[in-house]
Image 1: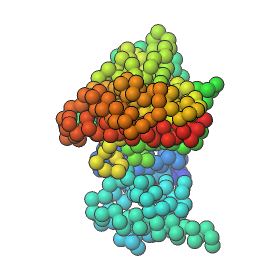
Image 2: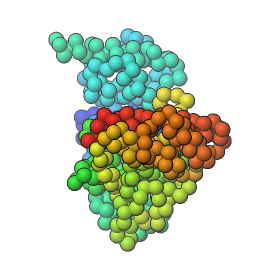
Image 3: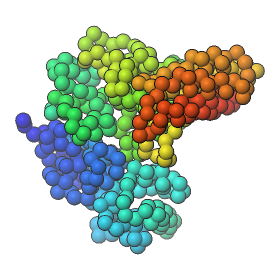
Length: 161
Length: 288
């Protein structure tokens, strides 16, 4: 069967790839676009390791058929830093030791970015709810939550100048 | 598997007519896990998300029209809808994570036909109607009449839901939904209970609907609770009768999420609390 041609924008760049109809967007990102940030954990939308933004909305790329991306704007973890400058979330995750094995980290970063994009000043409870769709089996979550709150503070300071 | 993303209801009807193995989807939050679990993939997956009627949430002449494929996150973000139908919007917002709520839809929740679907009891107590499209045109059917058993619906081959119609609640009317899960997020209801209450000017109950999820093969309504409520004040005695009626109506199974005895008990407790919450909001003016 002929493969499907998909045109989209990924991390600010126009992109094209060929995919099968039943292929997940996650597989297309990893195998066709060689963007290895998003991970497959469960493959059923429970763990959030494959989280991406599509048209600004946080979604599990494992639940998306790759052809759905045609015409869409996608942001993966590879796209959240500004060139060589890490995103404050990435910097705070590093400084706060918010990862051990790192498999879940790209998903957490993208989900946390989605939260801070819409709510720059979240409470701890709001962070915990917003990240409920991301599972980590190493850190016990506390360092992750604290790092997101630290990043929010840092971004507010940057805005305040 | 083939993939199609039509932009009109008529195109979907035509596509479903070409392939008996075709299946419509919105968020695929049930479809993909089912495929991963070994169910055969559909011959043709028809993406409904490019069709305005399937995605729009709008208020027209006293009736909300909620696209069957609209993600539940769109409902939560709609302040006017949440003011009118707080229980329904809350129920939609309980389903899965933020990631899921940016994909999962009321149409999918209903047509996946899980007895534990969180949004269905709330649709039922609000007398929601489904606009169903198919080879013979469109028909409107009560949401209550769609699920017929776990994983089964009354939709004929080639039919799919376009949108839901929910009338704005009258004055002093509101709804509520409560569910029990053993954690705070990301779980499937052990029991769910929805209530919609209308009060009269004296604070007496003038209308009541109660529906339960996860305690029978399909969503069930509790007419005996309505009888106990309507016509008088909502006293502790009436609430006890509501709880007893809900426990009596529940016809649950034993599974890893709960036993029959536990689910019957919790059905009564949640029904009582949902009535109290809905009545409290109704007393504060309700949806309007």
